[in-house]
Image 1 (cartoon, one colour):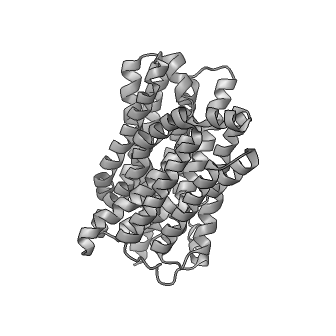
Image 2 (cartoon, helix red, strand yellow):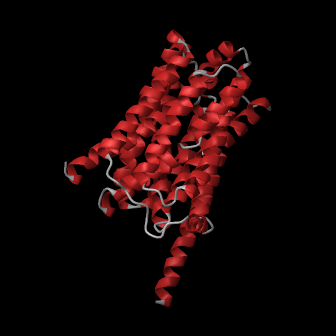
Image 3 (tube, one colour):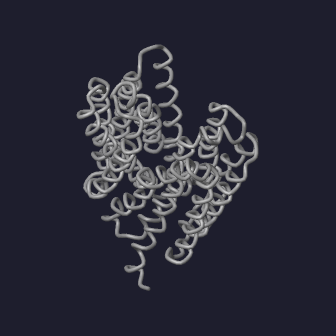
Length: 395
């Protein structure tokens, strides 16, 4: 099979990994009541499993990247898929809270590397002018997980027990391994790659500033999304039976955003990321004001999901551009930053609800986070342009 013909299949295999990762991350939230009941623990204790996964992501991104800097990228992705599959099998077999936490931590370890290295590999399989589209196609798996994977896992948990959902996720991990093995060509690590070079690249403002923008700005999306169920029921007036379709709508917006992001990023990476995060601030403002009107908030929520995908994919492409000599650490840390944003948004959203400000308040808090992310990204873009001008003047 020629490389030109195999490239779409390789990117599909990479997207399958994103689908599996997205399903296990978000389905864990919807399965909490059944996990808690089966293990004889409280819902907040079961929620520690979500935190354990996030801690695994943040710890695994720099650790695995540093330890595998010279490993062939195909072998690395296969290793990550194997760890992921094992972690979900252990989750399925968990008998108490400690074993659940350990299993979720293990499952989270390869998250950042799986998605980050997948983006690096996808970009390497196509001409530079098409790298944005390739990255966006790879990220489609993550967004489709919110349309198909999470609702399906939740349905299985309801009808066949929560363990059945993790069994199916493990099977998806195995299918991903087979796809990578057969369709992804060998992708040697960059010549001269080393853990020291990868870590050194992280000290540059053009790397850590976009990561900071993602860690803060993306928190705006999660300030709203974490509390979407009570918000839709108590403020918007959506029937509980229609909530799965609300989540499907949000997932469709994320998928549409990934499809739109490719061509946009191929034209301008900086403009795409900036439009994405600033649009989030504007749309979250509209939602906070009109949350009681379903015919306004649902379409705006769909647009917000598009903006979110445009922002996250744009940041990924920007990091690959700025760290071309050592892209692996920054690409993996990008997803660690998004998991930090998840925790930050959920925390601040819960804080304003606890303060008695109601379920509109998380969206308002999200506006502030998105604006802060916009400001940080503007600083990064400004410094980048200043650096390029100075290079031209010196030259």
